[in-house]
Length: 459
Ligand SMILES: Cc1cn([C@H]2C[C@H](O)[C@@H](COP(=O)(O)OP(=O)(O)O[C@H]3O[C@H](CO)[C@@H](O)[C@H](O)[C@H]3O)O2)c(=O)[nH]c1=O
Ligand SMILES: C[C@@H](CO)CCNc1ncnc2nc[nH]c12
Image 1 (cartoon, protein in one colour):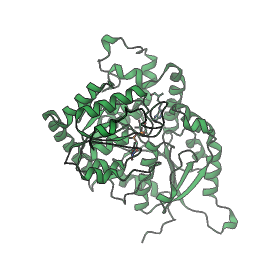
Image 2: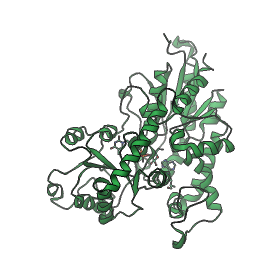
Image 3: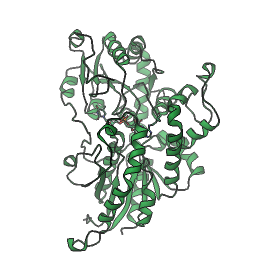
Image 4: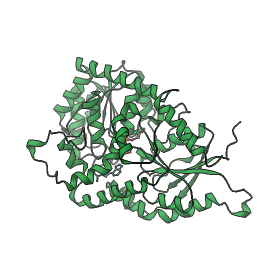
């Protein structure tokens, strides 16, 4: 029997839902390999410790004010968190590493720290404790390389992109098109802080003991090959974390509305389009109404996540025209938060209108659900181009939040023969990715290597 406690891993997620899910999933994977798990987390977006009784949770202060926690500016939030958390994190880590002598516990063997690439102070802190640090990349790996490319492309003066070149491919950063660039690079006020943040991420990753990537060769071979020319740290692409064979549990910050499942049960196979824009994206009211009317006009059934506060200036969905829900005659359901993995795995779900956050993108691929791509910010534009143009397992809305366009895309995907072809292709991709995490697959081998690597120090 493996004696737990002897090999301990300390995890420090970035407090965004899209980064908490991968980190807790990784915790479950490592726990199943015999490591005991300690999670250091901020007060902001603290994970629910009661959902994970086998792990130890330690909270640190993050200094965010009430209004800063509500901000829509993720870059600002990440900058503040990185400025505020270094000392609390260092103090917390010191306590974990050297429990007070009167507590009676002997010094524990800590294998390593694993934290998100978005933390930029942790490398120097872990070095000061002589603790190996592994970095978690919760993006498609090609986008990690994009951290180098964004500042470089900006220096080369690509912006603004003339209309005549909007559709051109960005040779330095395939498969992006030039029109994606201006939306990835943020507002002009963000350019300096963003480039400086990206630079810090790269510099803090270079000396790390390794990079754990939520992707696999089947999805990222080109960039994994390319990265060996750029970086010298070992890279562990261990596949989509949630399909590794560990017990399921939720790490949702909001309560999933379980009535989604009996509602789906009442629908025919592949007849429902699931609509969700992730945990951060928000809409203005007119875009919200265009989506609502577009979905209604398809006459297809839809399940739509509208987070409270995600329609600008409104609490929830009160700006829908009166009688809207009734007019759907049971064909539409709107919830505040969905049990997304169960929804995507449900036989009734036939398509996913998504913002292409990397978690949602992987979850959809792993269930073989074809997508309609509506990226909002950041890596989502890269993911959306892979989905629509490289793997051809989805339809790109090209940012057109207009009822006609949405209606048309849903019908193409859910009703027309084009949708059948897309569905066939995503099933092939699903099978390849799922095979990768099975014994003998490349992601599975990579996980074995990672486990070996982090076991050395505690042995
Ligand atoms: C709206 C909703 C979401 N979820 C889950 C599904 C996903 O695991 C997770 C959301 O993660 P993502 O799909 O990656 O999206 P998001 O929250 O925007 O994630 C951020 O982090 C991602 C990973 O770094 C980035 O790829 C995104 O661009 C970034 O915005 O939350 C639910 O379980 N139920 C829901 O109702
Ligand atoms: C300046 C804007 C431009 O699209 C990116 C900031 N957004 C983000 N920056 C860094 N990590 C993130 N994880 C999720 N969103 C992120």
